[in-house]
Image (cartoon, rainbow, N blue to C red; front, side, top):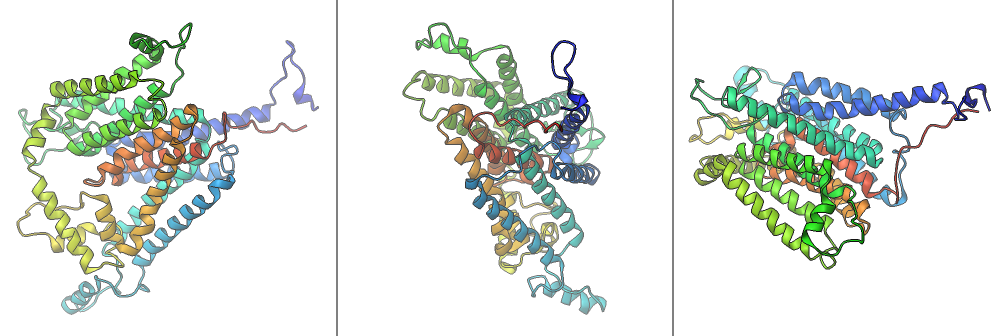
Length: 494
């Protein structure tokens, strides 16, 4: 034993200074991983270059530290049953990145963009070498954000193998959403929701009588609804996933006794947060965001209650009661949502955008038009009836096929759907305490994934970053060993 391991005055072993420094370094790296993932939501959703670019750089630095072993512990270990899906996931991500780089190069075969370069040569007398990508600078930005999401997934897989860190991720998501909703309420009172900081959301002239939909710290109310819905499902998971206080004599089936078992100080706070977030979700008036959030909460409940219906028949009554509470709450606070659902003035516009997107796919089905090039090709194909410019397809899968083509879209879809499916696999574990975290990851990620079918939630950096972290956490917990998976202490030299 070295002198550093000497026994203290009270008989306790003294902590080796070097080991203490390494533990502090581990905790610092873990904090640096969580911080940008959660803070992006408070910076206009991270959609501006000044927001997402520094975050991407910070994530890169933290990824290097994690790769060196700080904060990860044994998180990089690969169990036997994890090896094959992990290899498939890595291969698909490499193919996706390689295909995106191919679109930027002149060695790619001719694609639908070739006639545009030929027209530029005929009109201007010179033109850039023909490449499938219409906007190489935008493609680099999108690719950088995608690589950042990949790094976040790998770090979450390593760090969140510890169940304590996984729960911390859920709690930070809830906390950041509470801040976003609180800020939205303040802006709703002071500027009628038309300002986010100094940014004016309202098109046209703003006056004191103008009203805008609540979007919190996000620019777009639909993206705000998706993020708040994710946090609401996370709060529900924390309520259902904690330990219950078992009454003396066990559970005898009385309904009020189930409430006594469920409620504690922290659960009461979380339940209040659930309703607070639900109010913000309804005030955003996002139809798809509300539907996706309800679907995520329902999926979470079904996954957690699997196999418990016979032994707990009272759960059916509680599900009915919860549904009635949501309906009453929606009738009181969801006036904007109901008004928007009845009028649905933007439905025809989205259908026109989707039809134009299908035309773009038909013009270049295999090599696409390049990452980040949707706005350019839509400018060419935009219907004459649409006077307002548009740079998004309002459907992430459709926009992915437009930009990457059929060939590149397949590995891009696998990169998202494979971890999501792994989380579902983990949610089907027999042990309740082992399936709560992968079930939460699957249900929370379901909100932006489902919402992105008719919008662009996953393309918002803040939502994409958090979803990547959740999928990494769910992946780690799905393949985790039985029992606690706490990060082991670093060995002390002797």
